[in-house]
Amino acid sequence: MKELQYLNKYFIKYKYRFLLGIIITIAAQIFKLYVPKFFGDSLRAIENSGITKETAYKILVDNFLLTVAAALIGGFLTFLMRQTLIVMSRHIEFDLKNEIYNHYQILTQNFYKQNRTGDLMSRISEDVSKVRMYVGPSVMYSINTLIVFVVVIIQMALISPKLTFFSLLPLPLLSYGVFKISSQIHIKSGIFQQNLSTLSSFTQEIFSGIRVIKAYAIEGKKQDEFYNLTQESNEKAMSLAKTNALFGPLMILLIGLSNLVVIYVGGTMYINGSIPDIGVIAQFILYINMLTWPVASLGWVSSLVQEAEASQKRINEFLKVEPEIQNTVTTHTDIKGKIEFKNVSFTYDDTNITALKHINFELTPGETLAILGKTGSGKSTILNLISRMYDTTEGTVFIDNTPVKEINLNDLRNNIGVVPQDAFLFSDSIKNNIKFGKEDATDEEVIDAAKKAVVHENIEAFSKKYDTVLGERGITLSGGQKQRVSIARALIKNAPVLLLDDCLSAVDTETEEAILNTLTDFTKGKTTVIVSHRISSIKNANKIIILDEGKIIQQGTHNQLLATDGYYKDLYLKQLAEKEIV
Image 1 (cartoon, one colour):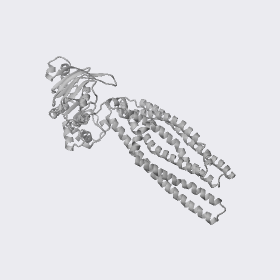
Image 2 (spheres, one colour):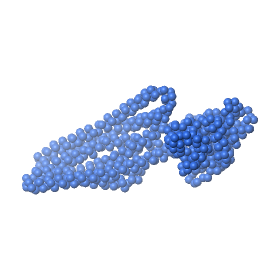
Image 3 (cartoon, rainbow, N blue to C red):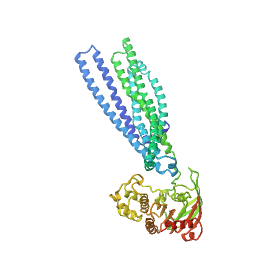
Image 4 (cartoon, rainbow, N blue to C red):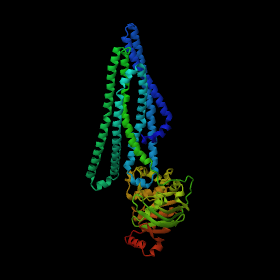
């Protein structure tokens, strides 16, 4: 139960609803207690030869009406109990899902590199559902069972302590059986949930990469892999179900034994005159049967608790992960756009690859820096350090002469427009994808941003134009169109700092020239960092640096670098010969 203690804060949050549910449960059980009493009184009236038939008949009718009234009131209170405690569990489910989602959002890039999307989804859906069953039905039936036991056993003891003792003798066997089966459920539930996460991750990757699978005609192979995973999942589920199935028969067996004990011991006591009338035996049988469902539910509740504990343990593993990037500054920060790298080095934790080695450069507000270099030379890493997706291993990144770690993280990122290398678009309308950069943007602003990104005409060609809903990851659009919508999303933000990570790689030279002309006007007064493999994209930059294996091997302006033999000049001549430079 250690893992489930994390949920105590939610019980405290909803304490009034929780306490009301307990009060209603107690009241419901008290009313239900009258049913056996009225039944016993009726048998006594039938058995009593000292009263007239008319009196006995009147007692029967009165007890019948009282029994119906008690049952109706008890049933209504039980309904209110469910409305109180089950609704509370839905509130807790809502809060827990939001807590997990919000925590996911503050975790860093390293976390998402080390964990699969399917596993993350499984924890916020399947695992939270298991936990809800604990805070709802499990808690409700546990409270109900406890109250029923206390109320019923006290009532039984008041009537006949000896008969109560013998009728409850099977309970130690019940406790032992619950303990043994519960321990197995806990182990098997954890294994099943882990297997379910693996299956979710596999299917998520298959759906996301379906085009690649079809292109390589490996549907059959993936089908076999999916079958093996589902087969394994089925085996784990069946093993858990078989263990759960032991509870019901065990409970019924023990209740049956209690009834036999009541009949035998109670009958013997009645014959010996230890109990006054046969109505006591009838009452005890009804009391024992009142315990049937609460006792039978112990098994089900126990399995729910074990499954919830296994699920909450998996949830806690993620909730305990501290984000590497901490926002320790609460004061507001204005960003003007000066960027400086002082002896910056960076090593990726997951691969131990040193991407940057002793990088130094400075950009004044309004300047444009271009970064060129081979694949894997560290270009994108510089952009990630500016937006503080990672923190430097050595050295310091300064924004407006302030170390980036000392700037409010929200202000920093709100003042940076980013066009990532992977132009990720959401499965939403084109308009909303562009407005992602500015939620309150008008339609005119959206169209203006699209025109600047030279994608307006393409959007207008769609039947629903800007209201066209894109497929997953923007699959509806071509690679070039996705890049240009991504550019429009960054431009509409109108931030003082603009980071462009090889964002024109999928467009033709003519479209590239049109976009560059637009960006030249748009970026005036904005600090811009462009990563590219094309000379034509960066030739007008104020500063150009060439990276190789994380080090700056050349830097200067376009004309300065052309006058010097090296990587830049060689690439320029090559692209000029291939007519890639416009």
